[in-house]
Length: 499
Image 1 (cartoon, one colour):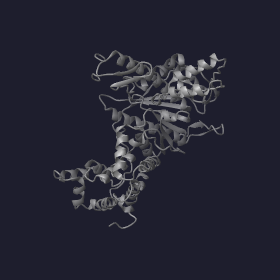
Image 2 (cartoon, helix red, strand yellow):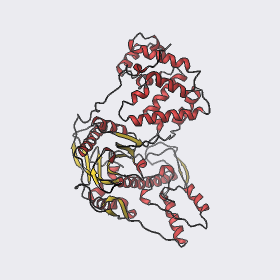
Image 3 (cartoon, rainbow, N blue to C red):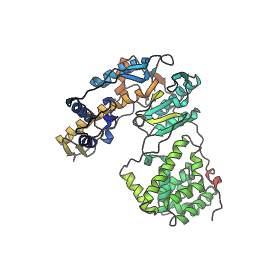
Image 4 (cartoon, rainbow, N blue to C red):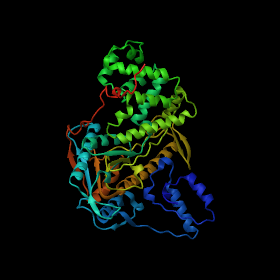
């Protein structure tokens, strides 16, 4: 059994029963156990190791890396030792020669004078990353081709940007697009949190209840109609108390709203006759939604998420094909914080934008790990569970530990230590995806709280790697100039007269 470090206690019990009297071989690496949110428990790996050894089995330590060249591996060995402690194991590299001159690990931090908002520093960090990628491509930095075993100039597909969370990946794609660098949001994250799923839900919510003002405003601002915020604001000023947005749009004489009214009337006339998937398809055809998102940055990712949402709706339709019922089920998924996987996407010759968890088991010549100053959330709910200690409920507030039950504090402390250990393993997995070159960036060089920067800093310093300051520039903090759909653009794509 491979990847054994990701085994959870339920799988452990099944394996114990299945393998009694059988010869079992497990392969795993404790340092790569990063799926705690799926109940993966590294102690399962340790228990099975002890069982195998106690039953006369043997252990083989694999200490040769066939991925990374020797110079980068030596840096990793020094950097990870203080971070991992007793868990650390020095590795040797099968490939001796690096494909390009040092440095093979670079670190950058935004240096801002005064109080600059995190969002602006992050935009500046993203702009700097796009420049670094553009520079490497323009200079044709040499990388190792794993298929041929030779060296060649770098291509966009040789680069990955790996984030601990998937939410900021879109702005990396925007910055790369502004620098004429292709990128693909290859995976990770929750389909329900994507822009395309929210657009589709807004459409279905409005069709199930035309008095849903919030849904219609979201629909008007989406690529379905692409009305700008100024027009939305003017309409809001015109709306009288008690008037719904549906009535407001229907009564408006504005020229920009004529095609909008025609499309909405057509959709509303079909809402009781057609299932939700048919309504989504009709709206797409009438407005050219797919054509619009196909011309936005990250088009392949957007189109895949749009297809994924329609497939989710099709699955829900099998229980009931009434729009109201499907919308109610979608709301329940949102309220339950359900995780619906996004459709996987092959990057091709484009920069891969991916979460660290999704990147496990993959590799690229160049890996960029951004946003190291982002805090790792360790907030606690009112109820905590522990398989050994049981259940604890905090009847107080979310403040200091004073007044919280002793068992609650004990479980919270245990969870905090487990999460801290796993976070260190996450920041071991991410850098080791690199074959030739690693770049780490941060919005600040100052460690604040529990974050990736805090985890990596001691090891980077031990390896002689310091953060190069990147002076903050207000121009770099501005969103990049990107093509946006014209308010009239979707409605030029009507393929048949309405009415």
